[in-house]
Length: 103
Image (cartoon, rainbow, N blue to C red):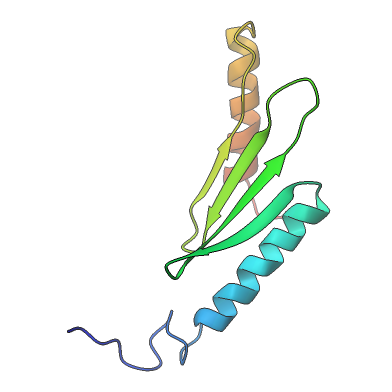
C-alpha cells in the first residue's frame, strides 16, 4: 500500500488540497455559467470535472470539458461546407486565445 505524506500538494492537508480543488472547480463552473454555458461539476470516483455546454439555436452545441488536473477539451461542430480558410481561421483564433498572454 502506498501512502502520501500529509502536506503533499494535492492532499487535503497540503496546499491545493481537495477542498481548494473543489472551490476552484466550482469557481470555474460559475464563470462558465456567467458566460452563458450550462456548466455542471461532476465527481466521478473522486475525480472532478466540469462539463459545460453552449447551446446554439440552429446548429449543434459547443461542449467544454475541464478536468481537475488542468486538461480542457473544447468540441464544436464545423459546417462541412466551410472553406478551408474558414476552418483554419477559427482554429487559429482558438489557438491564439489559448497560447496568448494571460488576460
